[in-house]
Each structure stands twice: as C-alpha cells, then as structure tokens.
Length: 299
Image (tube, rainbow, N blue to C red; front, side, top):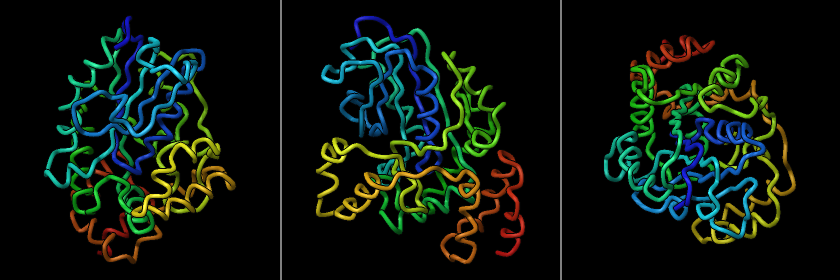
C-alpha cells in the first residue's frame, strides 16, 4: 500500500471491443510528467489489483520496484466483461462494483476518484465482438452473443439513467468530436488534453477486423508473454504477436464506424437486433447511425 494518498485514482469500466484501451491510452497521455501506474483488465474477484490484472504499465516509475511502494501519483485500473458473468449469471456492473472495497484497500486512500464508463454503439461493437470470437476466441471474456447483448443493454440503461458517480464516455462521440473530448478531460484535471491518436492502443489486441492494426510491440514484450503465445490452447497467438512486431499501422477511424456493414447478412448478427430495445437504446445514446434503421427494418 502506498505510504501517501494517491493524487488520483481512475477506475474504468467497459465491455470488450468498446474502445477501452484507446480511451485509456488517451487518459494516460494527460499526465506526461506525473508518476502513473496502469493496471489493465482486473479479474472480477477481490484481491491485490497488482496481482489480479493482466498487465502493469508504469510511467516515470522504477520498473523494478512494485508501483504501490513508489507512491504513484495517478493509478488507472480497468475492468471488462469477464467469463464469470456468463458462468455465474452475474450483472456486469454489480460484478465489478462488488470488488471496490477490496481493491481500494490495496491501493490505499486517494485525494480524488474518477469513475469512467465506456460504451460503444451496438452495431459496430457487436460486429467487432463476433469477429473476435470467430477468429481469436473470447480471450477470457464472454463467448455467448446473447449474454454480450444483455450486458450491453445493462450498460446502456445505466448510462441513460445518468450513471450516478460516473463519467460516461461514448466511444463514437469521443472519436468524432474534439469538443467532446475536451469536456471529458475536465473530469481528470489534466496536465494537458491529448489529441486523438492515429496509433492503435498497446493493449486490447487492436482491431478485430484488420491484420496489423496494432501498435508495435517490443521484442521484450513478446518474450514476457511467452506463456500465452506458446500455450497449446492459444498457439494461434504466435502469428498475432509476430504481426505486431513487424507490421504496425495506423487506425482508420472512418472504417471503425463501418464495422457493422460486414455483418448485415450474417444470421447470428441479425438475431441480436431482433430485440427492438437494442436499436432504441443505441439511438438514445448515439443518434441514428447512417444505414442502421434500414438494416433493423429489414429483419
């Protein structure tokens, strides 16, 4: 536990494939001169967040010393939907929020807390998730699209109800609108407001749709993840990691808005939108996404 209170604790919630890592990377860019620790994708269980996260990233901290022993000024930690939600039939929000006290006991007190809820429109979000499931598997998340839809609806309803205590970040609007990003940044008291990067996020596996839409990985990162790469169950990760070493590219933000069009004739995808509430919640949050009303009417 840090010996002094944290300056700022940031907790981030968002379904997989919602732009979580791009937004988190943007948040980290607000504090270029501060001591920052990012704990990626915590398990949905009580415990030491430094041990139950998938990755630790530090800025301006000694990499050989546990971050909590160095009094980082800013700690960011994130949650995505986990397979445990599906197997134990939990609510996503209650599953995450139920861990709060245990996590904060390990982090210690903070002068300020900011809670962030990230949401992406279902048309592109579900398309990205289906693509991920079919080509790389669930990666620890939910593998049932009906459950993924249920979690999205829960998150959307919470956002529309005001998401008490949370700063809601609508991924689509965050990508499109600089003034919106500046308003979101006000919640963090930033040293600076970063511009939208055309570089993919370092975490989260990049785009589900295009080979090479990832940030370049250093060789040391590949070697540190050798257990995942060479696991018999996940041997296909080898090609994925190698592509990230040799073929970094930039994000096509316009293409990100059009993922849903790849699935307009896909029966599993079409079934997700036979629940009329999905399109209703989407329009309430994001407005009409061009072409999606006609798509829903065609079902």
